[in-house]
Image 1 (cartoon, one colour):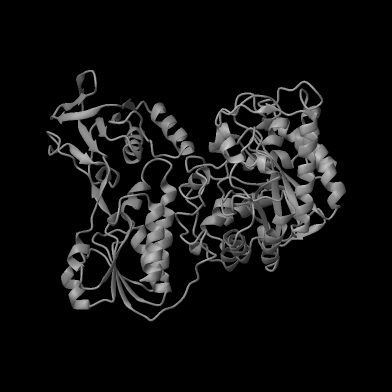
Image 2 (cartoon, one colour):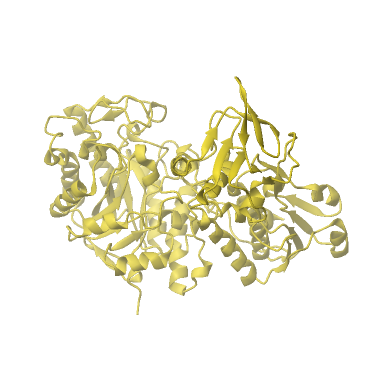
Length: 636
């Protein structure tokens, strides 16, 4: 029996070849004038080659003042040609493509727009904190024309339709919700008035672009803020929009103040928003698209089988593996790189205005400049079986080399394996499992429990050695640091060290806070000691929301602007700017960062070509390690 997600579906007057959808995701791949670049074009072309049925491109601003990020634009005719090159490339694979169009409203900055912010009411976004001006009737008319002209240019550029962005707290969402709309004229107050602007825009676009041009709507099922729209009011809106003639509804969630529900981190369960789509589907007779941390195609299939949605958006899953639909059709689920919801390369970079990338897919964003090429076969030794080393071994094998991987322990994954142990982070193990599968699939030689030495190198005479020996925990010079009840966070997470009931964690960075959360889960009384003014400073804001909630819920005591002076058998002496005190502790866990392990590089210098990658080069997060591993294996 053919899986439902692989069957065609009719949206409006168009047939989509399957139910796999790529939703709009900001990439920062276009130039600052909104023009399509080769990077942007090849990125979307690569997705279409992977078997997706429908691609919804990231939010096209309807005018330069309506941008929230460095998004593409169709606010002037000169932009049409480049974006038409993209739609032609996507259409060549049988994939449909529609442009999400939007105005950011108050959820932007003058640093991006170069102009005053505009909104239904003069109330700032709590996140952006810039006071917008209340739109006049003349300005509203101008924005309506901008939406229509953008849709017409999208049609000229070859798009199959547009998605009107009425979600995530942007301008049209602001009009729809009393959270941002405090007007008392015909555009405010009751729901009929608040729906007026998006419906007026819909009618104008339909009149200009015709019945065959798709017009869909993306809307937050719940805004998850006090006074925001909930699913019941969203159902009213969806029903009214369907009766008006919209071709599909795309159900998401959140606004900037609740951004953790727009792009959910690993702390949020997979498929978190599916029931919102099901609620909307119960009141409309047009296709409903769901979204929200769905990275498994079989899960997507079951959602459709259950009748909760007609199509499934798998945004970050498409970043992690653009070939996901094709691999699912081939039946090899183990070959799919799954999104791990780390957000390090996608959400973090997009928010900083930088081009996005992906921890698990080092090729993302580089489709325009990279191709897998085979070179003269060489003998390559990879030292270290963490995620950087395994990625290097895979890439080197794909480049045509004879590869041997050496790992000093009995486990693959390195520090990344340990990172999967804290609560809600088990999904990280899927990357290690995928890399291990790829090593086995390619027949790469793996030597476990083997410490690679200069002697081995001299005997084998490899053409190159990639050093991915990782890092080791920093252990500072503190009185009492050598006592038996003082252990490292890595040993605690690996199960190599037991701790008592009262624990002091030295270090409030990511490792320290997550280790504290892990220990508190098992009923330990935990105190975090951090020298800086706050903990988890390197955590992305949406991840930090859930981490801090968990620490609070489990009663973890957090002491900032504080350092450890000494450790005794009974406790820890702490000091800050004003006083000194002792905290009783049965165990002390050291989580003060890592030092690179790269002595092998010095030993091999001049004996063979070497490449040092990952934490062995510089201690950073795995986003850099995987990319470096891929490049080292490909280019050595």
